[in-house]
Amino acid sequence: MVGPVALERPYFYCRSCHVGLYPLDDALGLVAGCKQLDMQHAAAKLVTEVPYDTAQSLFDDLTGMHFGSERLHTVTNQVAKGLTVLDVTPSRQEIERRIASVSTGRLRRPVLVLGIDGAYVPTRPESARGRRPGQGRSRAKRALWHGQWRDAKGFRLYLLDGDRIVHLLSWHQVQNEEQLGEALKQIKEAGVIPEEQVRLCVVCDGAEWIWKHVQGLFPQARQVLDYYHCAQYLHRVAKTHYDSSVQALEWVEATMTRLYLGKVGMVLGGLRRMQAQSDEAEKAIANCWDYLNEHRGRTAYQKLRRGGYPLGSGGIESSNKFICHVRLKRSGAWWYEVNSNQMLALRCAKYNGTLDQVFVRYQQRLRETPE
Image (tube, rainbow, N blue to C red; front, side, top):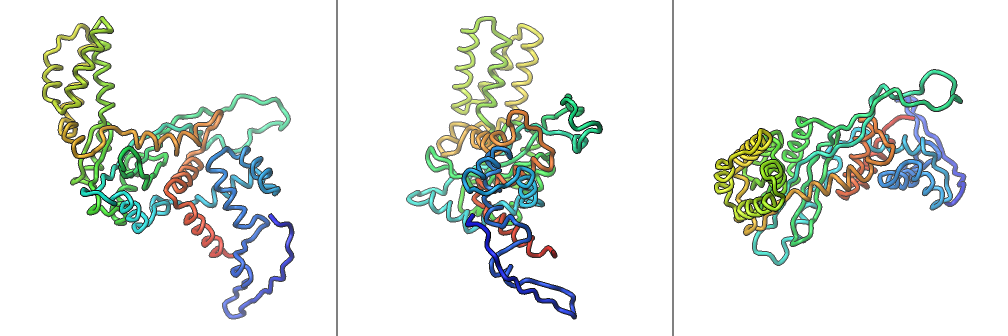
C-alpha cells in the first residue's frame, strides 16, 4: 500500500540438514509472492461479504492496489482450507466473558439457546469444472450441467439478554446429519461451553434426526418444539377442513391460544374429535395430531415463558439468513460444494469473532510450508 520497497534478504543454509532460510522474512512477517499477508487479510475479509468481482473492484478503489478475482479465489480457498468447527470457535474464556456480561445484575443464570436447522444453497456438480472443448470465441451456450439445491445444515449457540441476542457460535456446512452431529460432539467434548454457568435450552422443529443428536449430547437441556412450526400444522388443518375462511381463522386462533397456554392435551383432544370433511382434511388432521403427540413433552409453553425460555427458532433462522443466504444465494451463483463450505466456514468465523485467529492459522501454515 506504500509502493515498492527494496529489502536485502540474507540467506542462510545448513549443510548438515540441507535447509535454507531467510531470517528477515520471519522477523517482518513476509511470505512468498507479491501479495503480502496484510493484503491477503484485507482481501479475505472483503470476499466474505461481497462477490469476487465486486471485491476486486472495491479493493482496487479503496487501496489503489490490484487484486485479481482469480487471485481472490485462490487466497480465500487457501485461508479456509481444512477449517473445522473448532477452528472457528471462540475460546472458553471468551465465551465465559460474554456470559458474564449478560449475567451481571441477574439472580438466575442466563438462558443459552441451541438452535439447529438447515438452509438450502445453490450448488453445482464437480463435473462442471473446466472449460468445454471447442473454440473459445464461440457464442456462449447453456451450461451442460444442472444445479442442485443442497441443504446446508448448521447450529447456533446464543444467549438471551432481554429482547437482545448475544451471539456465541455458529457452524454451517453443506453436510449430512451425521457430520453435523460430529461437529456438535466436538464442541461438547472440547468443553468450550460452560454448561454449569447457563440454563441450556434447545429450540428446533420436529425433525427426528435433530432431537436424536440433542438427546444424545445434551440430555439435561430444556427441549422446546418451535411454536411457529406448530402453527403451520394447525393452519394446514384449518385450510383443508373449513370451507369458510372466518371459521378457519377462529379455530386457528382458539387452538393456538390453548397451545400457547400449554394445554396441548386439549388441542390433541379437539383434533381427535374433528370429523374430517375430505380425505385431504383427514390426512392433515392425522399429521398434526401425530406431530403434537410425538413432541407433547416439548410444548409446555406457559411454563417455558415463565422460565424465560424462547418459544421460537428465530435465532437459527436468522443465522441461516446472515451466514448462508446473504453470501451464497446471489443472482446466478452456483457453488462447488468445497467452495461453498469454505466460504461458510469463513463467514462463521467472521460472526463468531474468530476470523483473525483463522488468519493466524493460515500464516503459520505458510511459514511451515517449505519454499
